[in-house]
Length: 623
Image (cartoon, rainbow, N blue to C red):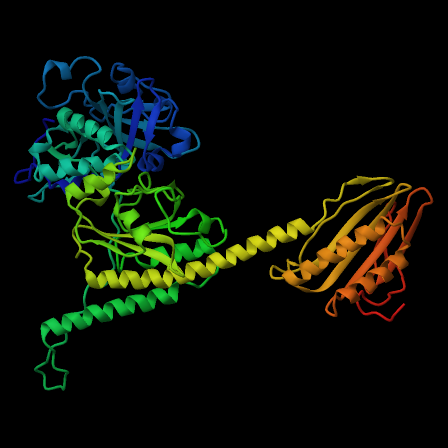
């Protein structure tokens, strides 16, 4: 732009000043979305599953760039803003092949004014792509509102901004392109560019990055002729002060008060490091294990390590453990399926979502530190992952590029074990600007994993017992047909409490000759698996004797004799009825059970039937 620069103002800003939340989208040759980042979901409001495979022009205000139309044309609900410059020229030097129609990058500004949602102002950059992959356009977009926080009504604005000399001037912004080498830390800008392309293979991301650097780095031009390189930034949370560092050593004072003399620096540092780790383990022990719910326990274990001990923590569990099945058999191998059940980090929000999504099932390749940890059951420490090591590990995984996430980081893998069997493992990583893991950290991580493994095993056993009890109860409940001769039947089993849902209650309906139906309701005293097993035996006996067409009272006497032969602990109440629709007759016998309720169809009136109670099954000696 030609508007002047305030005297004394810098013509370039550091690269960090241009970090903004970005939406990243890749569009294929048919104009359909093939890649939709988390930032795109936040900006445009469409989830990844809804966007992938849909026409990009229906989701974003870049129809003119994708269709190679003339500038200044409105597309659907998006309107270009005449007050903001739309830079269709690259702004950099390039050969003729870069400036032929459809072969150069474009940038612009648009406003989304759909009914039912707030107005959205968007700045965007679109790059044409060539190569073997499906992608034909790379789209970067950002919310323009964040650039006018000083109170302007529009992006051009009569927005007041103070220059370096204190004088105010008008500001206009335009998206444009520039060589990344024009800015400080050009190499750092080039290295950070792959971060915006998560969940892509190294070949695809490398191809796209090379073309972006050749066509021009995305920048914002301000009215005072200032250009800022744009890098992805999802808002890094500030780490709490004083956490993760060592306490300052005490030293003597000269004010006359009695103070403890400071020990030697190396001893004080060692003492502080040990105390810090013990305090951390004590704090973690108090946070985890507060519930026997497996999912909640996993979240507690993973979240407890961030940010005090690590910057990233991911927990993986064996499929059998997560499904609540029995104890896993044997050590894991390359075919073992692991589920990534939770991820916690203090990096930019959304940075890990596409590459290491929660809920993913994966088998880890043999030649990786992850396989080494889960197969040996021992911690694996890599103080600093070099580019060569990070590239080698990333190369073992298809369709994902781990290099921007793991290179130059410190990595610690700790197994989650119970009874010497690996149930899962945790991946812990620290950013390059933090002290790398050392041997003391490995010991701390192993202790954390040992406590977490015990808690997870308790939760796993509880989940397994719940599944077994549910399966047993479901198998015990009858499958009563809704229609039988002369009557309709409806049933419902509703336990009075969660802990008492497995017990000896049962009901049944048995078809008898002569269009008759036998109805049974019983309750073995007590709860738990023993009561359920007793109930199964008594229910089978009732169905067998019902087929003999015994009168209700006689059937209950025979059931009482059987219960006494089975053991002294067999006590149950039972109500047995035989309904004859031909005679309109109902015969009922009661062995200590609560009486039935008769509800009349014509008026809904209910009454409790007055029946001889009788003694419970298993008492014996009583008529």
